Amino acid sequence: FAFDIIEWIKESKQMMRIIISSHASLGAVYLMQLLRSQWLSETSTSLSELDDSIRITCWGTTAITARKTNGNSVNVLTIRKAVDYVTVPFKSEEDTNDVLETLFGKRFKYRDGGLLAISLSNLNPQNHLGIVLGNMSRMDPPPPPPPLNDMPVVDTPVEPWYQGKCITPKVGRLMEALDLERINIAKELEIDVRTVYEHFAWSFHVPLETPTDKNDQDVETSMRPLTVSEMNQQMHYYKNNDVLGPTDPESRYVMEDVPYGLVLTVILGRLLNCPARLHESGITILSAMYGRDFLVENELLQGLALIGEDDLNVNAYSLQEWKEMACLGYFRER
Image 1 (cartoon, rainbow, N blue to C red):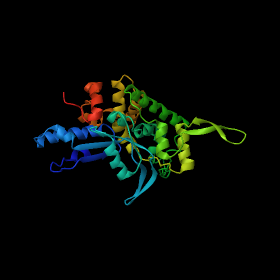
Image 2 (image 1 turned 45 degrees about the horizontal axis):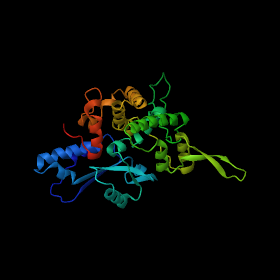
Image 3 (image 1 turned 180 degrees about the vertical axis):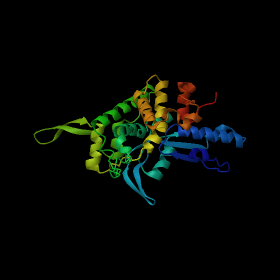
Image 4 (image 1 turned 60 degrees about the vertical axis):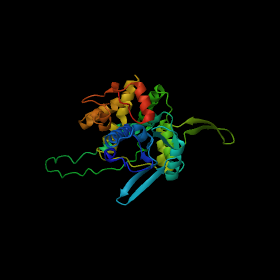
């Protein structure tokens, strides 16, 4: 991990600022606990001095959606209108927001609830789960079959596909149901987080609603919410900011997002007795497809004692300890 190679510069008199884009799997907590351990081993000053000298800012998503086109260029498809963030240890949001706006422009929204809010505001892994489950045959093209008799070897080319276009009504409904699990967990924690509809509207510049009726003067008189599928079709056909979906089963949509993006939601759901059944079922299904156990592969959560040898360690910390961690950036030592 990049977190493991960050070293504290003891001689520096300046504030150490770190930005994690986008934050997942309590990466800030993992980093903070590494730095605290390093501080204790290399200095004689108290940890409170470290808390006064470091700020870790965590984004709920990335500022842009882009694809690398070759070694020297990137195709930027969209610049997000709003990016949720928090900073730990919590002091106040004003100074951090000034830094972010200086570097990246006015697009940042502070989220109450600390790292728990940001952990439940990163929608990309849950969205990618719905996309992967609905489009695995597009991601995993079959290799040429063994030759049959004297017939020539056939070619099985990889076929490009557009991600938004392939979020059909049924795939979109699955994504909406996954989102409801996340929203329900946030409600149990009394945390306000963005919805999947807000995510697509703020990220890809499509509306949240569409007209349903017009009067005799052709003026819109009523509106209804768009579905996730409809929003993605607008992205594809009208906004031209759709992205090509993965054509490699080793895509980050699975290899990173499943163990490092979904498992924390499952842990929080179990802790709060508000199970994320679709999240957990998706992890189980993909584990069967890939012949591995994605549920226990997250090394960051292993390092925080939240994953044991073969299962999740849901009771590693109390709910109160989780809430303290959300503002401090680390779990207190018992």
